[in-house]
Amino acid sequence: MNLSATEQRLYEALSELEVVDAHEHLPPEAVRVASRVDVFTLFSHYTRTDFISAGLAPQDYERMIDPEEPLAERWQLFAPYWERIRFGSYARPALIAVREFYGQEDITEDNYEEISARMQAANKPGIYHRILREKCRIRVALTQCGRTDVDRDLLVPLMPIDYYANVRSAEEIQQRASDLGERVSSLEDYLTVIEKGVAKWKSEGAVGLKMASREYGPADRGEAGAIFRRLLERGTDHLPESNPLRAFLLHQILDLAAREELVVAVHAGMWGDFRTLAPGHFIPIAMQHPQTRFDLYHMGMPYVREAGVIGKNFPNVWLNLCWSHIISPKMTCAALDEWMDLVPLNKIIAFGGDYSKPVEKVYGHLLMAREDIAKVLAGRVEEGLLSEEQAVKIGRQWFYENPQELYRLELPAVPSPNSNPRYRKRLPGGLPKGGKVRG
Image (cartoon, rainbow, N blue to C red; front, side, top):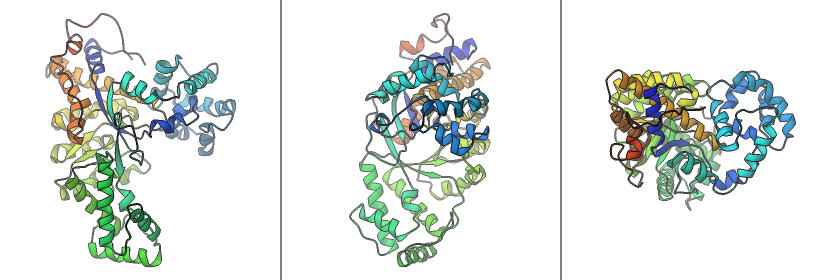
């Protein structure tokens, strides 16, 4: 991508910064290493939406990413639809990955087998460190993989609130209790289980919990207790998505998060019927739990202005750009530029790759994030609103300091952009001539 001179200088300065990756779904490295991988692994995440939207049948998509199916047959499924989605922002991290890690400029009929062979050869212990720490300069990545047994030097877990809040049967309730050496005969017993379970997660390194921005309905303790008793008596119940028990338990856990000093991450916007996940549904929750710190995800896309105003108005809400850069760089840049007018700088978090199996794509997403941040900050510099040194300092806040402070991560101190010559050399008078952002 061609950048202006100012954008290029800022991009290169931002590329020197260490990063707190504020949202992934990466499992323990052993899970990835034990998997068979090939070129189609790079399309096993969000590009699913684009392939199916472009016309690929869901069952054919599942065959396409299944490593047990013949590679050549899967290429035949892939090729026609690849031409329909390859210029979208979901696809770009895959192309960056094959170039940076596997030595190919494109994915074609002539090289897909070679890319696959190189991927499998590289799929060995140390792959996370090589990609995340060495290539991306990621100090830690916050991951949501449903478990806490991860490499704590590199991955830091968040756990799902719905594991405890969205119970639908007596079997689920007793299983949650049994895992902690407890037995449940009342709602009060189950609240004790929740407290014990969340404390266990924290002791195992979790720094936050995860929920979604939905209309949860009223949280009436009496109704919640009646539903809970029916579950214990009947074994199960046909509960709607929003119900008083789920709402009551959610609010109890949000208060518990404040006491345990755990951040609550909130999915907002993009996914399925995104109207049901609009960030506006989250406003009453933020108001009812002023001591709980919330990390509002994905810029609330497409409700980016609504999310910005929430971040402005509520001191307990931060705004996270995770996923946003690959949904739409243009929407991300436009919204972030507006947010600079709206939101205190300490409330914005620049990056989360939001990937699981294809760890290679974290690098491509991060490259795109650096481009977006450089463009927005360069615009402010060119308008005379910032100096370039101030712009790099803001970038450091967004990529490192803000997520570190929000999640209270115990990380080594990093140099100030103004004191480290590696940053200063990128600013006017010190930038080496030549060199463009590729990809």
